[in-house]
Image 1 (spheres, rainbow, N blue to C red):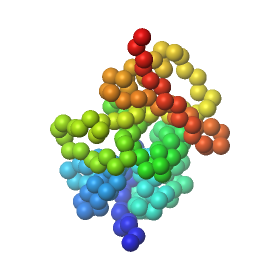
Image 2 (cartoon, rainbow, N blue to C red):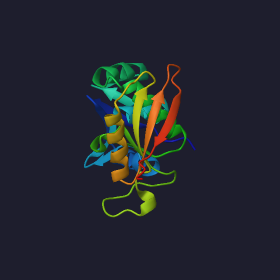
Image 3 (tube, one colour):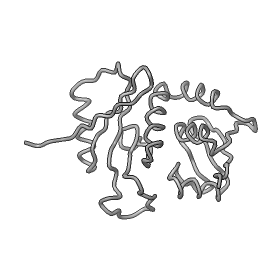
Image 4 (cartoon, rainbow, N blue to C red):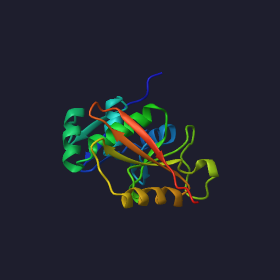
Length: 182
């Protein structure tokens, strides 16, 4: 049975699904977005993914927004949008639950397959973030201090750090970097 198409409204650096039934369905079935009092708030990468997959119709000022227009707008707002979107899409297509990682200082938090959204409160060990992901283009250079900070952050929240490198052909290679204590 085909999935119901939700309507979303583009608003600067996010979109919102105002219909509560659609909002709850997208969140509970596939763990997209953040539930808010009036609906579901989606990041730009989530919006682009759902639009590309035909799961939402996107509007801005009551006019339909195409994938091309969203992509262009998102790049103006977030210069790293393309790299982040390629990684997000790759992980989602692998069946992984992916959440934004802004409050952790990374691009994404990724969970084991099959993990469902957990309401506020304690989590079982298997429900915690498995990886925190940093998305970079293949020509990216960083210092050892930056890499060390990322690995320590992951270690502090009991996760592993993935360095997701997007090459010029838009393929993603993942490097799992862990903290070891001698």
